[in-house]
Image (cartoon, rainbow, N blue to C red; front, top):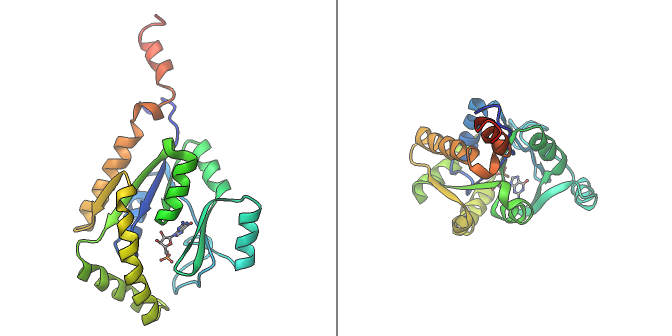
Length: 213
Ligand code: 5GP
């Protein structure tokens, strides 16, 4: 099966902050050599521990605008008063080299990608198991970061808005247990990879099976 040519897919993960999306994404990347992550550009301040070029490309608002004006962004949106966007070139290069690309973007970016590449898109929304758990995770995380109480409260209220967009996604994972959530995310990826329409090399393969008949 591995030698059948397949079109790369764009695997989008959205969730409110603190639902465990980063953990799930990192685990998928570790376990799937042919999966690569799209590193976004953002104008938000770097949090402690974040690395430029690894977590995000941290850019100024002018630099961000220039990228948008030059058509270098596949999608972009304003989230919590900051700009976020997906640089186009790395995604196109990864897809054309047969890799799948995972995106950690919000619902606005997902809508934009769906307008330009619906056929190649697989979208997953991750929900926290309960509101109290969401708040706990956000607070725990903020201990290691430079986030203020105002930032946290802002994220809690935005989480409610964000979660109303779950209806726009193909799949929903409720993150009760992280290992189980990772397993579900992997199952989705595996199933989507063998969708017939993505296996562009299938007709040649079957022709070979039929002995050219
Ligand atoms: P954070 O600041 O916590 O890293 O991310 C805040 C939100 O911005 C998250 O919901 C994340 O998915 C979203 N986000 C990160 N990068 C992008 C991007 O390139 N485009 C869009 N539309 N949203 C993004």
